[in-house]
View 1 (cartoon, rainbow, N blue to C red):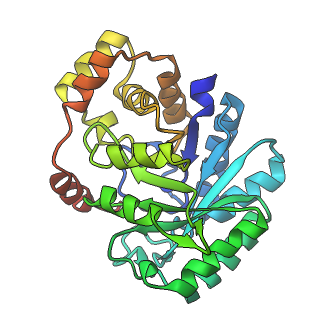
View 2 (tube, rainbow, N blue to C red; view 1 turned 60 degrees about the horizontal axis):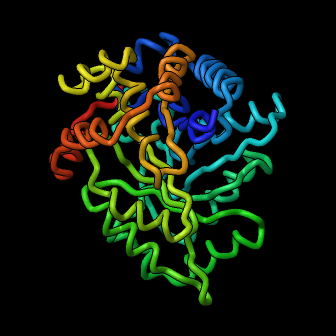
Length: 312
């Protein structure tokens, strides 16, 4: 049960008709209409909650994810759920699977203010954590004192302020963000970063963040589905030895990191989620974790390959 409570559900692949995750389309309604995707989202949320998952993660750019999640929360009235969302990207795909552009990034004070109001409306008082979406070293946020001060005001509303990271320089971004303070108080109290057995470059910085008291969330632990659908041979061999599927092993590797407070799954169907939950029954010793860590690749290569994944 402790492992289950450390799992969270991310809605990146459920709130919009197109996304980059491998192995997603086979699990979704063929039409991928708004109504069908809302129903699919609610089905996964129901299974997740029944299993004991209590952290749900969305973003303004995840299509209608906040709307779907807010509707589910109001209809089901679940207890003990923490909701995190993110601002900084705008969804512009117009619910088209072949849109020329699906999301646009902007880290500005105006974008924050407008998107925070939209998030509040969609999630109707359920928000616990609000994060800067895909913060990078060159983000204007680092020079925008007014934006930093506006974010710090969220704490007066009882919210935690966080950031997510992407790209090959996640570690540098994490350390720079941890150094930000407003009126002598650290600005950020949560960090959400990509970590999986292929992309471990942020590990030391995430450990430092955890030790400093930030809540660490891990995203893309299945490498956008690649570790479930196309696992490395050594990983497949260990999964067979453990009598689990590769997706459960990948999640177990993330849960095996003591500095990881919440590990997000991006399951898009009850079947995928149930398979993912097998991670809670997997025990990996130090040698097995080290062997899996040995499968990591240079971050520049990892992010180049991720960028090449098609939106479908």
